[in-house]
Length: 607
Image 1 (cartoon, rainbow, N blue to C red):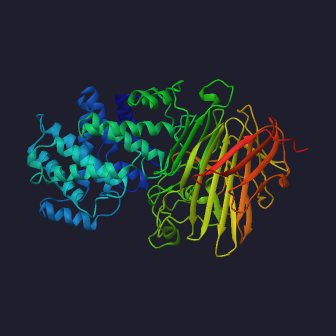
Image 2 (spheres, helix red, strand yellow):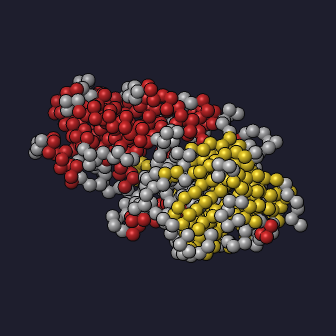
Image 3 (cartoon, rainbow, N blue to C red):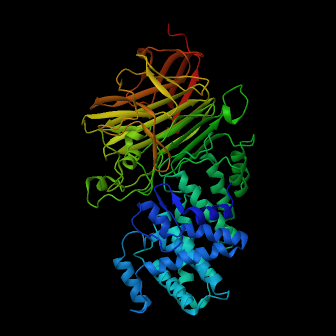
């Protein structure tokens, strides 16, 4: 891991950059505008200043602190706030009402306040900083606090509200009472912080913004706050639960399951192991034998996870079977149009993937068709990564699932559990107010995954249904007529994919398509897309439609669709095929609770 001082030295020598933007030098005057939206937010949140302050804190080298102060004072000189023209209260009101762009973006204000409070605290304790310079810092601290206290700026329904409250509370704990408004800033931020902690997580301590990446980010922020003495110690047990849950979100490759606005990033690092406290998460990140296995269902949050080993194999990361499913819709925040999608790993290899976040770009125009559908960012690559067709789910009538002007249904996860050697999940959702959708995932670790979908519009309206699947980039797909073969030069196995019922037909295999529309891509890092192969089975009907798609780890696959029998409600049936392991039959039915029950057996040979 690069040290804080090495990072700061690089910034002082080469400037500061993030994917999507760069400033060539941190020496004033700086160019504070004219960058991409995401880069400009981080710049106005003083991220490069924070890097310099971290190095100063670690080394007490004043070179880093002086550079941070110079940048902060350049921002204050550039932000068009003149304290000689009006009262701070009036200036704050004007700022709230008129400010646009990144200068006073809600998250930037909060993070900047925290970093300015550190600078002002240090400057007030050393010689050589004039009263004029200190007073300007104090004026900005009060201005930032007033802006953050405004209900027009506060964002209580998203993680932004959490970070606003956390940064303001941390800043006010550092600053003297003279800079507080009769204790209002500290009191309000403490109250908001308590409220936001409870709002960010489900009762089972899973973050509710549809993204393992944000579960990680908010949990890390809370742990840092707790260690800094900012949070109540009573939260320790809850945070340990959030840590434990994070472990289920870590795939066998070390990345988080990339649902929603999550970027691929490895957590298999010593620095990550050292940071966390919870034993089972540390075991997962160390890839040790103590890594939890089994099936974990978060029915309130809408996630299911399975981490198991095939029978009679060494229990190790390279032999792990992993399945993760997202079935949550709590709000629009960081939510892709990915209802009931999933990712799948076998024997340590990523097979079916989510496209990941890509990046935050410029906003779509308010009132535009894209904006009304819930697409908030205008970059076509970002739009693609949010679409339904970019995920392992069913697209209806070539439309993405709406995420605005619809009532979020919370969790669609009905059941997830282990049934003998099978992992079974059941979800149920209603799309476009009329189309009912039941999905079963049935996995036998190291052997197969069955994806069963039932869709029906009771009004009798016909619909076009497309069941999409997206393979990780290294996998190459070949249509062999009866089935599709997936191969990966780095994997010691192949996968055969087939529809075991007659109605759906196989569409074209697509990889890295740019026109007439993007299709067959995944994001490997911020602001980057790489080609990946995808396929879809489609059916058009005004009656109930059933998909039964098999992914079998095998070199040979034989089946006859007439041997697979599923009733019209998909609540009972038998699915049969032959592969390298022999003859197979999966029987589905209902438990006494009404949930799905599935059983695998070696069936009589189909021949």
